[in-house]
Amino acid sequence: MPTRLTESTTSTSRFLFPRWANYMVPALVLLAIGVLTYIPLVLALFLSPQTTDVRYRPQQPVPFSHELHAGQLKMDCRYCHSTVEQTPYAAIPSTKICMNCHASINSTSDKLQLVRDGYTTGQPISWIKVHDEPDFVFFNHAAHVNKGVGCVECHGRVDQMETVYQHESLSMAWCLNCHRNPSARLRPRSEITNMQWKASLTDREASELAEKLNDQYQIQDSVFMTSCTTCHR
Ligand code: HEC
Ligand code: HEC
Ligand code: HEC
Ligand code: HEC
Ligand code: HEC
Image (cartoon, rainbow, N blue to C red; front, side, top):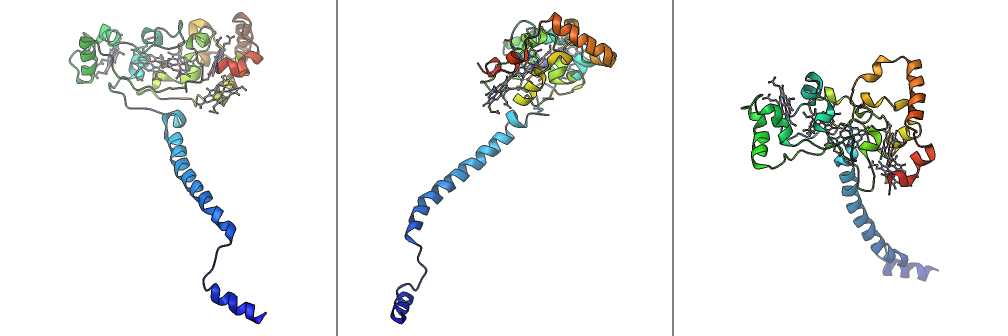
């Protein structure tokens, strides 16, 4: 017993890791690599417009104001976003549409220089996309608008936005929240672009109308509305 004790104190003057500790080295390296890639990845996801999206308001190359054009001047959304009832996409207007007015209105304004240049060269303005669903999500404007879902339901009061921003999360939970019971969110097709339509109805009128529109548009049942392949195809 005493010999053993001396032996061990001399031969192990420093602490020795047990043999199994050798396996920890590759494990720690892997962990370190994992953490080093994971953190930037998570940060990138959180900071990307796709996930921070609510209130995402990029600075646009031309200071175009919806508050002025759609609000004060009361221009209908479809004057510019003309494909919204026919196609999955809401077209962004060409400079030609702007020049319908700006050939004579503010025709020397610096703020409109890029519009005039684009009109002459035929180069579209590089507007920065505000809303952007990932590619694996299927979305269709016409399918919504023609069944009485108004722009304001998904984009908020664009007519009050000086610079347009993302109003809703556009997350899967948000889509499903309406898809589970859309009838209360429907309106007559004539009011699709009317930003303040709802305010003029009492609760009772609103719920009667919801029922009526649900029948009139023959809204699909909730199995279809919530099935994965409806939005991921
Ligand atoms: C005079 C033309 C014009 C009118 C009218 C107009 N818009 Fe726009 N809209 C634009 C232009 C140009 C852009 C791209 C620049 C920007 O984002 O501000 C745009 C961008 C948008 C976007 C953001 C698109 C994206 O990048 O995700 C939404 C949403 C939108 N408009 C909704 C509306 C709604 C709703 C109305 C009606 C209340 C409307 N717009 C009326 C010209 C117009
Ligand atoms: C129906 C007519 C009309 C159309 C179409 C139109 N605008 Fe305008 N825009 C106006 C009016 C009116 C004003 C305000 C003029 C004023 O009071 O100085 C204005 C003002 C502006 C201003 C501010 C100019 C300044 O010097 O203060 C910008 C920028 C602008 N518009 C961009 C656009 C763009 C971009 C488009 C196309 C997507 C467009 N407009 C389409 C009528 C129009
Ligand atoms: C049911 C919700 C919903 C309604 C209703 C809706 N939008 Fe959108 N909008 C979206 C989503 C989601 C996107 C992003 C689509 C993408 O990235 O693929 C979008 C994108 C846009 C864009 C950018 C171009 C594009 O198509 O990606 C414009 C402009 C726009 N919407 C205008 C409108 C206008 C104008 C109306 C009403 C006439 C309207 N939207 C109604 C959800 C909606
Ligand atoms: C405010 C309510 C509302 C919101 C929010 C909404 N939807 Fe819809 N959606 C509807 C209604 C109403 C229909 C029409 C159902 C029908 O055709 O009977 C529809 C239909 C659809 C369809 C079927 C189109 C077809 O082929 O017939 C798809 C796909 C779809 N929505 C995707 C989405 C996605 C993706 C989102 C979220 C980004 C979303 N919707 C948000 C109400 C909504
Ligand atoms: C009404 C439309 C809709 C339906 C129905 C739907 N999804 Fe999604 N899903 C979305 C949208 C929109 C996103 C993108 C969310 C984002 O980018 O924030 C998404 C994202 C996802 C993702 C990526 C991870 C995430 O959460 O961002 C997965 C996985 C997914 N969906 C699976 C499913 C499955 C499984 C079903 C059926 C049970 C389903 N989805 C039904 C709209 C839908």
